Length: 152
Image 1 (cartoon, rainbow, N blue to C red):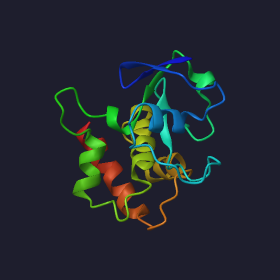
Image 2: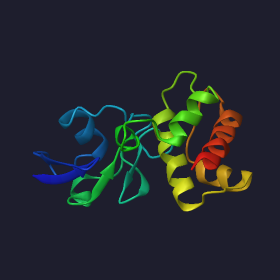
Image 3: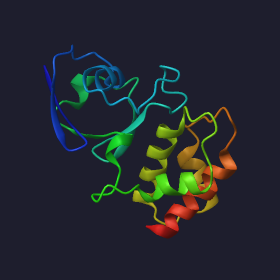
Image 4: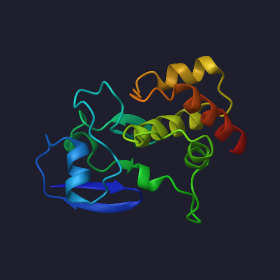
């Protein structure tokens, strides 16, 4: 059994230690915002934060994060329930098309802005390079990140 702190709430999950974190969260907690994309950490759709750092939950095992703080897309809203600046910028710039990769994109963008509150285009490109958007919204993603940086 693993004890995970997800979005500030403790969860006792009765799953094997080698269960991918993605599936443990989706199937055991009902938090389905984190998406399965490729299963090989290549697309970024499954990105969430462990101790504030972005990780690919499809290849991260429950046993490796037992007792650590996990944040999913559902957990990044502001304390008053309003959207995080990145989420609001995503809406303002109409980033989502199909929307499938967006939770992973947003989690990577939040991590970038936590580390670098005023990123240059090159910084954004480097931080987001592991996130694939099959709809090709990269220009809108960059604009939304810059917009969110100005709000934070």
